[in-house]
Image (cartoon, rainbow, N blue to C red; front, side):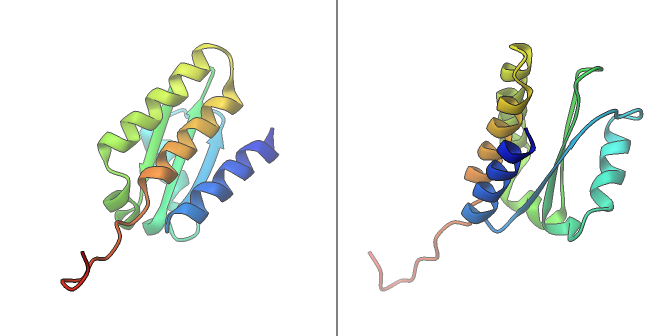
Length: 118
C-alpha cells in the first residue's frame, strides 16, 4: 500500500516542482485539521497535502502559496473527483494514486519561450 502511494508521489514530484504529501486518517475538524497538518510539513509553501478521512467521507487538498500557482482550484477539484470515483468502488490506494498523478500532471511549469523561438 505505502509503496504504491510512494511511487505515485515520486512520479508526481519528478514531473513537477511541487512536493506532495498524503495523510490518511481522521480529520476531526475537516479542513482546519488538514491545514494544520500541511503547516507541519517541510516546505509548506511548495507542498500539496492530500488529506483523506475515509470513515467520514472527507477529502481535503491543501496547497501552499507557491504550489497553488500550479495546482489551482480547478485542478484540485479534478483530483478530488478522481479520488472519489475510486473510493466509491472501495479502491483507496487507486484513488490516492489517481489524485496524486492528476495533481502532478497539472503542476508542471509551462515551458519558457523566447521571442526568437517558433
